Length: 422
Image 1: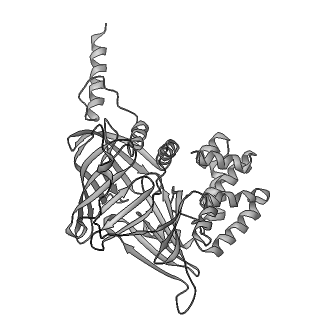
Image 2: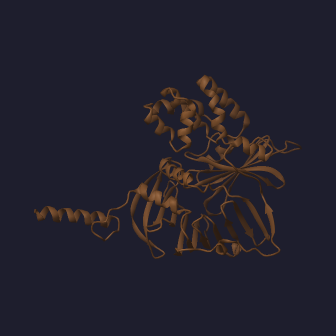
Image 3: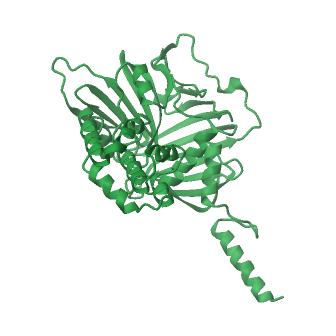
């Protein structure tokens, strides 16, 4: 045996393990994609108790909150805020059907439908969505709250997206720390478990909120959860609109009809796998001296931005992280006239294939995705519905273009032509 070669191989192995913060010879580091899959499964598949610190730096101060979290493997969770004083006693509870928030300052419990889809298909879709929108890189091993964690960096494929660094518990896959960084590398928000345990079982009583007897319960949602915009419109009592454009990579998850300030409304949830976007639209009466168009951008605590946008017949609120200009652009594309002109252009370009547009928009697909799927299916000679079905099962249009040997540049030109100026 050539011991020099053997020694050199061992040194390389140790060096590779050291890079990952590992000390055992022969340890095989997992693939980043596998860590992402482990993380998604654990997001609602473990029993957990812990105390969480959230930090959000601002130009003038650093905002922090401390909360106790209990989560069951069936997805039920309970969160109680301990600090700051202004939020002490706030309770958040989610049983998979209803999300409730109790505010002790108002003595009100607000209930709305949970827009989390808790099934295996949702886990697979979420994993594919993360890998579609982010490039994962395993940076090493670190200890958080006494637990060995993979440090996973997820770089956004979109220039405007946030870089997200996750510390994923090696054993359970639970997220024990999360840093969100803007394009300049500055921290937007940090969430860190100061202590955590993973008990074998957690009783239902531990995740059941206990509100004061005099607390008033207000139910916002007036319907079940819908993944079909037409059904959501019927439940809301007015034509609900899906944004024609969203920040890159976001997909419609589900929506529910609700009542906000006594007016029929709709809540729509979008996600790119790691960040969420909420769109709230309320039917607006165009009477009196109300402005026909108005916009307001507000900074919310802990890194979120709220855009309030008034259209002629609709009031829109968009809440999410990221570039406020993109959130404002999302609200602007909910103009019904803009949608009609866009559909006319698509019909002119794709002619006989344009009948699929209504079906795709009804599932919440944005205009660029609709154009991409129509373009790919046309170039490949496939029925549009085949492309739509593949997309809803997790294949992005680039996957389909590669599979059907359609040049991406052709599709991108079509997107730019029909969506670039909107």
